Image (cartoon, rainbow, N blue to C red; front, side, top):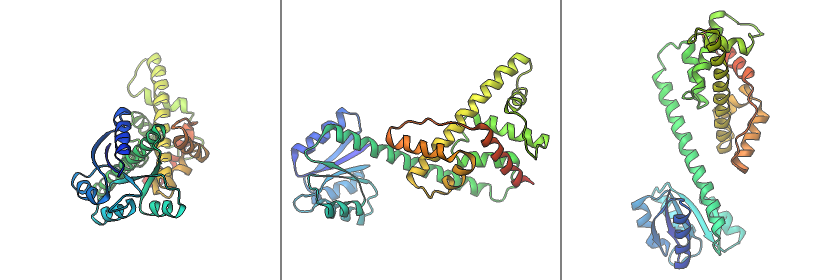
Amino acid sequence: MRYFIVDDDRASRKMLSTIINESELGSVIGEASNGQDAIPQILAIQPDFVLIDLLMPKLDGITTIEKLRENLYEGHFIMISQVVNKEMVAQSYEKGIEFFIHKPINKIEVETVLRKTEEQYRLKNSILAIRQSLSHFAEDKKHVKKTSRDHVQSILNDMGIVGEVGSEDITNIIELLLMDKYKISPLPPLKELYEKVASLTKSTADDIVKESKAIEQRIRRTILAAMINLANLGIVDYTNSEFEYYAPRYFDFTEIRSLMRQIEENNQRKAKVNIKKFIQVLFAEIISKVD
């Protein structure tokens, strides 16, 4: 990450710069002692984050942010201040502040805040890239009649797992189910489905058993990746269309909520994976699209 520091206190600028460099949080690409001097530099070099003091001579932090936004700067702001006035804090958040770092500066607080803002920054960029990819995908496929494989890949793409190794195993299972015309419940046991997919590439009984176990693990990891992706989408935007549609249909929603809490609180990513439910719901949706 690329940081620019705006603070009239030279010691504070030095301390922040040292923490960022020693903690390998990124690089400080510029400094200024007041908002007036900072604005042209920030607009010229476009840092990812601006660490800005609330109270400064010439231009205070809030006014500086307003002027940068007026000039179409789209980076992120982290406010530095010893002021605890609730009105000023509220006004700062209204202007787009991500977090506050309190003075006197504390190394642990700075590291914690910057790592959290970096994670959110990368996540937003990833989600934007996914949405752009989906947009191009939809446009390319607009006038082409979709096969069952196309429909499966489109759904897996929505969940962000079309590139996972297990996505091909999932697609093969759905195609086998369609071929065998299992259009009413119950579906065959998962073990039987794994073995059928394994037999597409393996010939001996031992090899089929080994491959079917590998298929189960690949699918389990792929479905967990989908759950994590959707949980991240829900954290950023609870009304996200992919989150709203897929999370309650394909998964146990309590597990998705648990993942969201884990990611927010301690960055853990553990959840129970229900392969059977995922396959059943996906198969039912594909039937509705190809019939």
